[in-house]
Structure formats: structure tokens, C-alpha cells
Length: 525
Image (cartoon, rainbow, N blue to C red; front, top):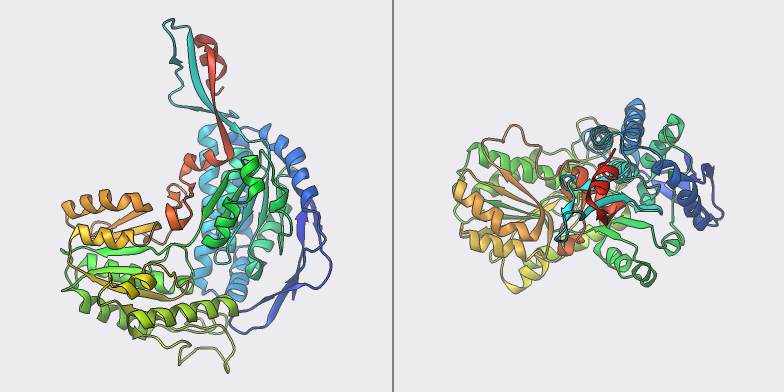
């Protein structure tokens, strides 16, 4: 059994009192413990600000990128161990563990390459580098520059992606020149803890650049002040509390939230059963229902299907579900879906499934699967694949549940629609803001109209067609080159997006003065 320590002020430390227990969700065995009570979060933040911040800001983007490259290599060096830890702490299959762990190293590598592109400078000139003339005289002009904020970046991550969630925020903050205090969800912190150990042991990070909280955050958020930033991934309720916290508002602490999202897919009226685009849509929908046991913020929860195609989609999804092997991934290599992460999550999922069953027609699923592979008795937090259909997706009861309650597990609801852009968009909009929306069609006009009408409701749009059916990774994959986040319910935040992700950690400042002087000293050299 592992005992997780926190890494604060460049030292591994343990808290006091009764520890929290981390479980294997497939067996309910205790696999690790951790405690943070009594640890001085204020001192940890002060150390990050006064030691880590100056060290990182003294480096160029290229030098910070080199750090990220070493961190990516550190993950690769212990990849097999991380995959095993992910399986026993998250209940993840081998494939799902790779999705998390390899996503972490890939994102670090992507931002390492961006650092190399930005080169030997420590600030960014916003625009083409030419000063803007501001008066009749061409001498007086202005430019915008972006420089690192002078505080610390606090990252609070969700339980479903302990490796990728930590790495994607860390990569952008370090490249932006801000030290990081990261806190993973306690219940699945084992993978993140071991990854942080590898980061520390690599020697790549300057003192104070990274701190790790292996358990309750205590008063960490209360200690934030002007110059700091807070990035949070989790429930919309907690995200709203952070965004509205009086001391954060008063100090002007930027808060980025990535929260709940009732992501939706729209199958176009041109799609025919058996076509490449049809098969792609079914494949993506089922993958999102079952990958990570449906515990993905980008998973498809609602599916708009033309009325004359819905029986075909139902049949295809049920066929996939009937062939899926569910159980303990560590006990049976043939298992393709494991449990949800803990008892509380299972209860929340089951409650949501019950609500969906009241408002729609349940096509498949009955709580715990009847057949489990590699599982003895009734242990483990397993949930069957559930599929629902709303006969009238605009009816009051169905609308209140289907478009408002995210079931964070292996479930999706099919919504028949008339094939029009207007109705599809109206149903999409009922989700009140999403991380990603998907459109499957080979009709260019339908593609264009759906993109333009659906864009205001989403942070990202995925267009599936026969042209990309064999190459696209699917809408559930978050890539570092594209922004991740969404409006409204999704948190109104934005992460990643290549160089765009740095904006959260940089202060943009307008500088005015003598034009030749500005262009000479602020050209990034």
C-alpha cells in the first residue's frame, strides 16, 4: 500500500491525523492513504511566488520548453508503472489508462515544441510587432506586450484524468513563466503523485516551480491574492463558488473553470445507414459512452438523430453494448469497461439514470451489469451501459432532465429531430453551453449552417464525415493545439489552444511612447 506525501517548499511532507483512503474501485481494496491536515498552504504559496516565480521568469520560452520536454520524457520512462496505477486506482482499462497517461506526455511535448518556436525571449508582443501610430505625429505610438503574472498558479483537477489533467495545466503555466501548486482529486491521486515524483526526480524543475497537494486543499484557495491565478476542473457548483469568492473577486484573481457539459452530437439528414459517416457516428457515440466508463467531460450525452434513422442508430448501439465486456481490467485483459471511480460517483450516476428513466424510454441498462468479468461477488462500483430515447425531446419533463442533468457515466439519450438545422440547434442550445458539439454529415451546406448556428453554444465543434472517418480521433479527444473549455454551463473558461493558452498566465499591457524606441526594445529579442 502506498502512502502519498505532498511536495511543498521543495520537500516531501506528510500531514497529521486520520488519513483519507484511496480505493481500487473494482475491488474496494485500500491501495493508498494520504493526509494534508496541518500543512502550511500559505507558506507553500509564498515559496512558489518568491522562489519559483523569479526562477521561471528569468528563463526564456525556449528554456522553459526544454523543462517541459524533460517532464514528458520522465512520464515515458515510467509509463508502464503509471498505466498500472491508473488501472488499480481509476478502474481504467489498459486503453483508457493510455488515453490519460499518453495524453499527459503528448501535451507536455506539444508545449515544449511551442517554447522552442517562441525562442529566446521572455515576453510576447501582441500583433505583428509594428507599433500603432496614436497621434498626428508618427513618433508617438503604442504596442501590446504579454508578460508573466507575478504570483502563483493554483490548479485543482478532477478525478477522471489524474495524469492528463495535471500535465495540461502544468505545461501551459510553466511555459508562461508561472510556478504551479497542483491539487488532484484525492480519490484518484495515486497516478498524479507518482508522476510528480518522476518530475521532481528528473531535476528539470527549478526550486519552487512545482508544488503538489496530495489530499484536501485546506485553506489553499483562501490564501490566493493579487498576481495569482486559479484554474479549476470539476463540478459547476464548486466552480461557481470559486468564481464568486469575495476575496478572489476583490483581488482580481483570474479564475478559469472547466465544468459540467451536456455535450451533443447531431447526425445530418443526408447520413444513410451503413455509410462511412453513419459508422463513424455510431463508433464515436459508443466510445464516448464507455471510454473511462463515460467519466469524460467531453463525452457525448445527447444524440440528435433524424426521425427516419433513429431505429438504425438504436440497433447499432445496442449491438455494440451487447458485445461489451465489463469488469475488473486488472483481472481480465478482455475487459473493455471498468467501474466508476468510487461509491459516491456510482450513487450519483444511478440517481441520474433513474431520473432519465422517468422522463424517457429506457432502451437498455439496469444499474449494475448482470455479467461481470474478473469480479467475485458484489464488490466494485460497476454500472451497466444505459441507452435512452426521448420521444419528444422538447417536452417539459424530458427537457428538464435530458438537457439539464449530466449523468457522468456510461449513458446517452437519443433525441429524434426533423433533420433541420433550426431544430437541431434549438436542442443543442437547451444544454446551456457545451465543451464540444459534434456534427456528422457529408452535406456541405448542412455542415456550414450547423457550424455557424451551433458555434455560440460551444467551445469546440467537431465535424465528422467520410473524409475523416478513418483519421479523426473523435470529439472526446482534447488536443493541445485547440482550445478546451466552453460557455455557460461548461464554465465559460478556456484552456490550451496552443499559444492562446498562455494568455491566462500572462498580463497584456499597452505600452506607449516613441515609436522607434518601442519597436527596438519590445521586438521580443
